[in-house]
Length: 206
Image (tube, rainbow, N blue to C red):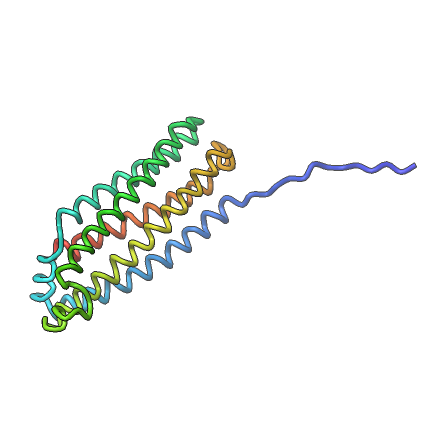
């Protein structure tokens, strides 16, 4: 008669590896925007007057409001993670939901801003822009490229946080298994930091 022994299977979760992978991914994002910042600086040095004038056409109020929105959202996502680690699941869910709402508010403001600028003909290859100096055309080309790319990152961040919200609701992310939420929070903080650089480059250009 043969006896068989069974041992409980252990699920290995490489938290450090996951965090390292996220930091490597964030580094590639920094390289992407870093290259665009260098390109902006090179053209800014070549067309300082045109870049200054271009910045006057942007809505600085909306730009500053969106900065406050993203700063607040970074705070709420950090509170959400801390609350989850303390076992305060309901508070974590509320702060995570608030972060998502704030991200959507940012996109709404950006839509309103872009709509206003486009209605005034301030977009690449428009008839009005074709009559403006080359420096103005480059400024608005960079503006739509860089803020548009950032907007795509905001959308990706909202999707990631929405998935995390579902995970917390279904207990797939808990106080002892919060690595996914932590990585999503890191990504959201990067989105915030990038915007802090975009604000002075375009809206406060002097």
